[in-house]
Length: 373
View 1 (cartoon, rainbow, N blue to C red):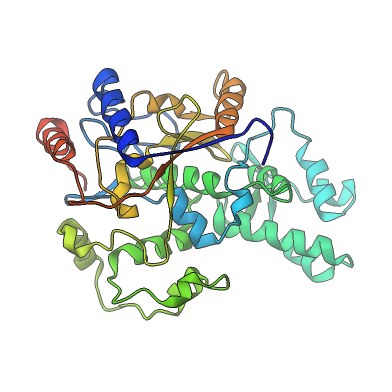
View 2: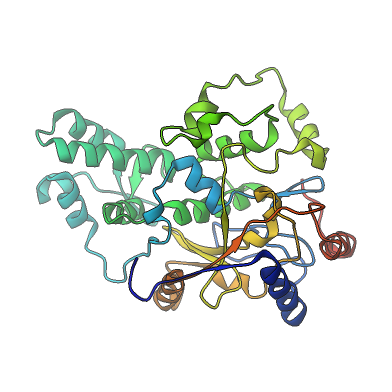
């Protein structure tokens, strides 16, 4: 483990006391009906009095979590806390592509395209390189880069964005992509909710998460405990209903009840929950185009733990793009706190929610929660 790294595991009861005390002292994070000004980000639904930190379906609060995406993608444990951080002084796009593809400056320069405010390389150019390149290692790198650029972080149709290359360049250093994927998923979904067209969204991974929470399973297979088990492969092999109209799906989601939810995904077996980093009262996430924060304490029911009032004050300050004033300093601050992680022991006792949480939730709904379409 890295020298100076703090991985503190705390008791469930102690965290609950800390969280509810902090929330009472600081208050909720965002002003009433807060809407972010970021061009590609609306509300992540970061809960305060108006409950804006999850995806709400009727009275159900759910959100993809770090632990769930780690399990889905089967990231090894040593990667979990070594997070991506956008480098301050980056090599040029041309130099990064030359190093990654093994091709010369002339070949690279002829294929770089400008799409909006970003530089990209067409998928066709990478495809041709995969088919003809003589170096096996370069072939594999280019193929993996294409998957990240076209499937995980699509932005310009048929092109791989420069920001994806920045991330991919760090993956061979055992940096985990999970916080990056979460950050971009939150931002993209929030924009979708406001009617903004979004390309940078890993739909397949989100569908796997969605399927695990909204389809009841009769039992947990023993395969979950096998090192070779892949929840993604099992989900892909599962038969799905294709006879339900979009209108019917909307009605189903709007009328969900607690008993309809598979709160804990059947393939998730966490012992601990990462709930904050450093002096932040939540978890900051550095994406490839910008940063956000999320509050895992809001969705403890997804870990089969008792839900209590989360601390979210100041979480809006985590929102910024990598072109805003002073973003470099913010990147350094958010990156450094991942060396001081705080985890909570998962504990399921009694009812799924505390009485204080229920009163807080109802008060927020009655006070000022805007209706969601």
